[in-house]
Amino acid sequence: MKARIRKLATVVEETRCEMGQLIDPPTRRAAAVAVIENPHAGKYVEDLSELMEIGEELGELLTRRAVAALGIPGPSAESYGKAAAVGENGEIEHAAAILHPKLGTPVRKVLGKGAALIPSSKKRGGMGVVLDIPLGHKDAAFVRSHFDGMEVRINDAPRANEIMVAIAVTDSGRPLARVGGLTKDQIKGEDGLR
Amino acid sequence: MPEVQVRKTLTSVEEIFHEGGPVSTTPSRRAAALAVIHNPFAGKYVAEISGFMDDLKPLGLEMARSLVAALGGDSRIVEGYGKGAIVGSAGEIEHGALWHVPGGYAMREVLGGAKAIVASTKKVGGPGTRLDVPITHINASYVRSHFDAMEIGISDAPRADEILLALVMTTGPRVHARVGGLKASEIKGEDGLR
Image (cartoon, rainbow over all chains, first blue to last red; front, side, top):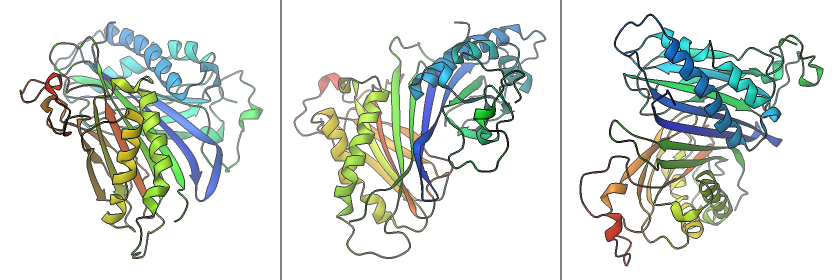
């Protein structure tokens, strides 16, 4: 692997009831996170292709881990999202290089489809910084029940010379979705939007 | 005693490859199982609460088993453990103490007769409160390489009338343990201490 990984983490969250309403089956979501060395920490580097390749590797590794943590086949995933936090000696563009050019293709390969844009967020921060990974339906971005977010944090990451990269996958939308809009059974799945 | 109502669960696993030193060939892993339950004693002083400990036993077992599963399914690889609780603002610290018996019992049961006391901590706090759960060796509390801690928490828990319960297991020592003391290989295993 190109990425020098210090630590990997997976988180699975399962909601069984909300506001006294039983959620059956429970809504479930998983995030897989990698803490890697930032090869460009502390200096300005024009060519970010190494980070783009790292993004490609992590796209596959983290999606596989998230799906395995949910215990479902990739195509059964319903929504997804990605995020990165760059340690203080890096720049926000390092997160962009990992997340945007090459990470999506292997994610979609593991999940079977994925016509929709993978929603993303990025920031620079110190150890323990909170990443709110945006979530959207993987085949139709306008599915309103699946707009959501998942918080992840690792108390000792990212160090100054590190980058924390996260991918979140769900098998469901919000637990008590009831604000209308496009529903998942209405998806046409042609343009990634509806 | 009232029924245990679980709102949400969270399982997280960390896999640690290095921390600036030699990369470990078998990365050590740490896992936490969290459950957010309704606090049946919230908002009032209830004198007799100890019966609730028995009610928590099945949940404790479920959490301990989910930890072993998250670590690969073989309980023999577990070397360290710990437990903790965060009580929501309408409860009291004593409600957190209800977790000592069922949490500890569950891990001993699943790990087959671990000898050491289960290290623990607890506090009262709002949603998003973090808790550093202490970890020690399962058979001898004085094993220095296994003194550790894992930070846990959930952004939306505990609400005022909830308790967040935590169990933690690890598969080995700190990644670059080198400060001497009793070694795991030197355990006598008679008193749970050495």
